[in-house]
Structure formats: C-alpha cells, structure tokens
Length: 191
Image 1: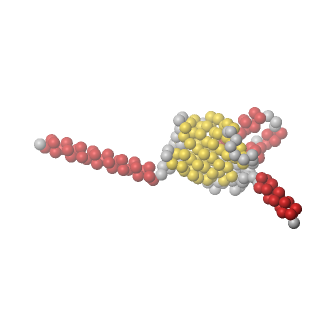
Image 2 (image 1 turned 30 degrees about the horizontal axis):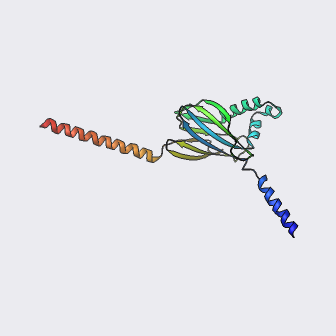
Image 3 (image 1 turned 135 degrees about the horizontal axis):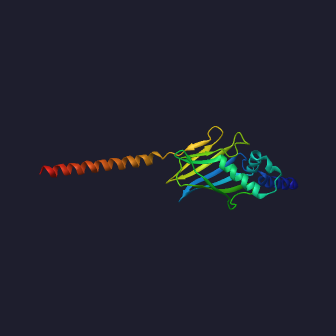
C-alpha cells in the first residue's frame, strides 16, 4: 500500500508540470509611453505553430533571422493600432526577458505615436477557431479590459463616462463664470 501511495504521489506531482497553459489564449498589455505605444505580449507555446502556418517556408528554416523577419511581419499584419483612422507604424518586435513559465513566450511591440482609439488583434486566429486574446489597456488613468476573438476582432477605446462627466462639469462651471462676469460687467455699466 505504501508503494502505491508513493507512485500516486509521483504521478500527481509530475503531471502538474506537464500541463501547459491554454494554447488558444494570449495576453496583451497596451500603454502609452511618451511618443510610442508599448505592447507587452504573452504567448503560449503554440505561437510557433501560428507562425509556421502563416509562413510555411519556416518549417525547414534553421535561421533565427528568418523567424524574426516572419514574426515581425506576422505581428504587423495581425496586431494593428489606429488613431483617428490612421494606422500606427510598427517599429519593433523584441523578445522580452522571460518572466513566465517555460511554455510561454514574451515579446514587446513598439508602435510610433502616443495616442490610439482602435486596437485590432487577430493573432493566432489562423490556427484556432476558439482563440481568445485578452487585453489590458492602460489608457489615461484607467484600465480597459477586453477580449478579441473570431467574433470580435477589434475594440474601440472610448473614454469612460466619468471622464465625460468631468468635462461637462468643467464646461458648466466655465459657463457659470462667464455669466457672472457678464452680469457684473452689465451692472457696473449701468452705474
């Protein structure tokens, strides 16, 4: 009986290391940084399959440069950020320092420009019909979270109602101030 428990313990312990994160989920953090938009991306191991599916010639390539060039193009075609209908230029795609599990890959994408209002993300849609890309957008002073999938490939950034409420309050205060100044001016003119 002791040997059975020991084998069960070994099996359970080792099996927890064998499970990978969901192969059809990727995570992105998007934020404005001075004159650039920075995207931190966390992909599962299956990103390599998506890249080879998009660029079949990579299957036999041993050149890291081939993979880097193809991945830049893949990101450029499948992760797009816009501002007022104009697409921001992808400047670089860099391997990020490894922070997660061994079955994930982290990258940083840099886009030219510091403002954006639409994000389109179809990464890995070419290999999974149930792919989900999770986004955390650090926009002004708030976090906006959304998911892209085959049903919803893009997301429009809209300021929260609290921001609009603040703008409206400022407008009303300004109008009130103007009315007071004009009233004061009219009364002074009548004297």
